[in-house]
Length: 338
Image: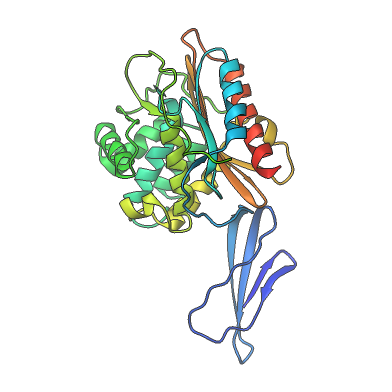
């Protein structure tokens, strides 16, 4: 078997059994991979896999969370300097080390729950959506451009209605132990939601400051981070989603992570780290007038960290929320990459 990217051979090895598997190290970025088999008689057969994105991170492994004292100190400083209510959750996906602030407080969810809609849709449909299919087009519009019409259509696709679809989203979240989230029906088509653009115990999960905002779609920094971590683990056939949602396959998870790597909403978690060579941010943000959040995975060669930042200000949020998200991601990357 020969595996190539462009003119470069990544593998060229003999195989003597009917079933086999091996790994190759892909170059950073998005590539096209060509796989060729050669029989004993010299007969060749080739196939091409397009749009392969190399994560450059260790294989996903479940870990027990542990509070990192140095990171906790930095996260506390950033949260207290924000000047309004915020919530932060950071966890190194390779070790479980991390930090949190106000991680169980519930905020208006805005478009962050479109990730949960996508997970539910993929778990309840057979196979990964073929390119150009109805579900593929809906998910790309919903995640890449954060389109509300596509989000409602996706809920109807797997639930028959936005009410039933939201109930199934809530059920999926509960099935993996996430109880701070309420989908609360479909998205308003008249809103301005998401226009494109040392020894320690576990990471502390508590409410330090609960914003008073009424009712509607809600979630917490912990729920958002835990859902994204579950998607990451499911990409290698591990974690709570693979157990609780057997219809959500490793291929589904990798498909979803690929879409998150192409979200067109810059200047948030990627505000600082996105300019660094070898760093990639997979994320889904959400905002309305008084709320702005971002939830993502920061990847670099040899590591990965989930970072969730939520902010609320009754008088209205602005670019300071994005600056906070960018600083949290930068501090986390500096701590874990060095």
